Length: 345
Ligand code: TYM
Image (tube, rainbow, N blue to C red; front, side, top):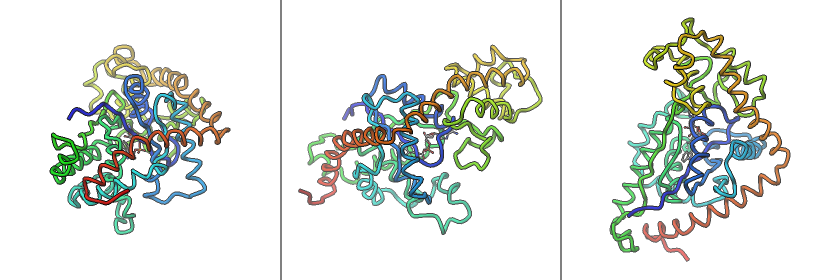
C-alpha cells in the first residue's frame, strides 16, 4: 500500500531545548511543514522515564511548546500537542511491548548510556522507551521522521516493529480490508545536513546534551545574546587555523563541530564555510559565528519568554492540537484493536 506522506516527530520536555535540538531536528521540521502534513509532539510520557518534578514538568511542557512556536512551527498548519493528552500513544505502546523482542531492546545503546552502571535501578519505562517511540509514529501511520542522528537506532527498531506487526497479523490485516497485508508503513528517518549531530562546546567528542552538567557545553534556545556570544567565545578549539578543505576537519572534532554549526545556521555546507574561512584563526571565525548565532537564536529566546507569559494560550494550542491528533489516531487504534482480536464498542 502507498501510505500518504505524514511527518511525525517529538522532543522531550526535560531541561531547556538547545542548539542540537534546533539544528538537528527543528530546522527540518519547519522546512517540512511547508510541504507535508506534520504532527509535532511534546513527549511528556517519555520524559517521566526518568524522575521529573511534577511542579516543573508542566512548565517544561509549555516551554517546549513555546520553543516550537518561537522557532517557526505554525500551530494552525501543523499539529502541536503533548503526548499524554492522546491515549493512543500509551495503548499502542503496550501492544508493541508485546510485539518487540527483548533481544531487540537489549541492543539499544541509548538505554545503556542513560541507565549507566546502575541498570538494575533504571525504570522499566526507560527500557521500553523505544516501543513508545514506535507507537508515537505509527499511531498516525507516520511515514517520515525528521530527527538527529542519535535517534537512528530507535527508528530502525520502529521499522522492525511495524514489519513484525504486519507479519504477525497478516491474515487479520487482509481480513480487515488491507489487501496487501500491510497495516503499518515503515517510517523513514530523515537525518540530514551538517548538524545531524551537534557536539558539546567543551568537548568535541561528546554530544551536545541537556544532561551535561556544564551549561557552557551547550547553547540553550532560551539564552540571551550575551550568553550565546560568551559560550561561542569560550568554546574549546585547537591552536591551528581552519583548514581550507573538509577533509582537514577529520581529526579535529572541535573545529568540525563549530564549522558544522556555522554551516547549519547559515544554511550552507561545511565546504562553503571553509571556502570563506579556510586559513583564518579561530578568533576571527568565532566572532563571525557568535554574530550569526545571536542573529538567529536570540529572537527565538525572546519569543519563548513572551509566549511563556501567557500559559493559557499555550494550553489552548495544546488542547486544539490534541483534539486534531486524536481524530487521526483513534480510527487507527480501532483497527489495531480489531486486528489484534480485542472486543471494542
Ligand atoms: P530528544 O528530546 O532527546 O531530542 C529531540 C530531537 O533533537 C535531536 N538532538 C540532536 N540533534 C543533533 N545534535 C544533538 N546534539 C542533538 N541532541 C538532540 C534528537 O535527535 C531529536 O530529533 N526519543 C526522542 C523523542 C521522541 C521522538 C518520537 C522522536 C519520542 N517519540 C517519535 C521522533 C519520533 C528524544 O528523546 O529526543
